[in-house]
Length: 447
Ligand code: GLU
Image (cartoon, rainbow, N blue to C red; front, side):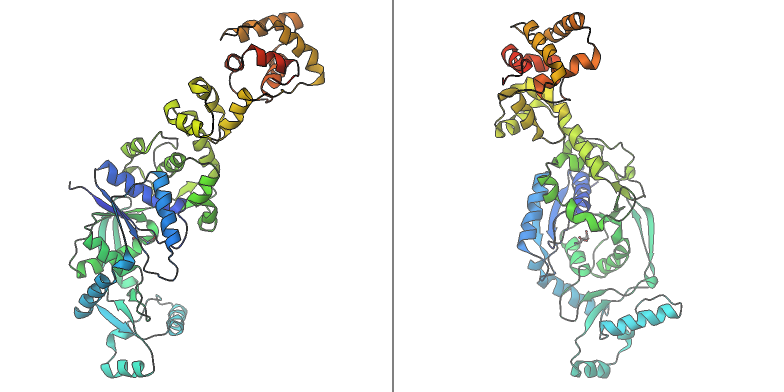
């Protein structure tokens, strides 16, 4: 197989969110696994809504996620190419001028529905005489331009959906150029896909009908249709639409919350597939496990709770070498033993600050009144030199001496030593605290 060339084509009209990141990820996983090329195409033909700030934001987000690209370009730099393609289609009689206003089109659609007919465009533009066109122009109406579909079925073998057939007689001839001369997304996308030699178009299944029209346009321009993979859309855990909540699911927002990029990629790479949803250590692992054949037809359910779980699990598995520079950046220099001990207690990486402070900073633990004597006695019984065995020997003696067992034995010690009801294994905590600190805290002093 020749090496794939794919493109991720976001519009810089908003922030990157879990929905479009999933599309970027699928492109990346597929292309990288096959040693192919990934192009970042900035779909900024909508000059009013596109901004450079959003464009920079989405590039920063992709970098943060590790979804690298080999080249990038902006559609707004390529209007001459789109003009040339439009001219070619006009000459072939496949791009025709239409003069209806949007109110007129609305009315026609309503009428068709009322008559039980499909609300597709009636193609009146195709049969206008030159005299009629001139009349419209004199009225001050400017044409918009539609592509003339063949009316035949367009068939392709989708890498996710299997055999697809779009009956082009059931869809309206798509408008490619608006009356103000601006391009809708359809034609520029096809022109770029041809010029860039795109071999695989991987995108959401909301584009399936588009693909029918785009394949016809592509062929009319002399291109060879690439392969398509249309992935099911993301929905919320309860099956409802995610669209309204996407703002709070932007990369920006998730980064601020302390979610790891690899947790996002793990979740988005696995939901809706036959693989288990679990934290993967890196993108290379994820890509070696990726296959379109694993993607099901049902919508993929996205849940923030599941993202939080995957995030935590990713941290619990994180090797020290990976954590070390990040710990140091947080001013934590407690070494590998510390990391291995506390990581299973983290939900977010920065939770490690709290644990480091617990070990490093002078503090007093929590001692309930009724446990005070017990803790004082425990302090007296604690040896000066603490080893990995100290905890079990020491608590064994305390058990014999006091008759306390289970929770009433262990919890007061944990609370006095760490100030928290939950945390890492106490035998290790005790080693890391050292005798002096531990004794002070057991006596209710700052240590
Ligand atoms: N800018 C388009 C979108 O975000 C690109 C779709 C495509 O991949 O062709 O929907």
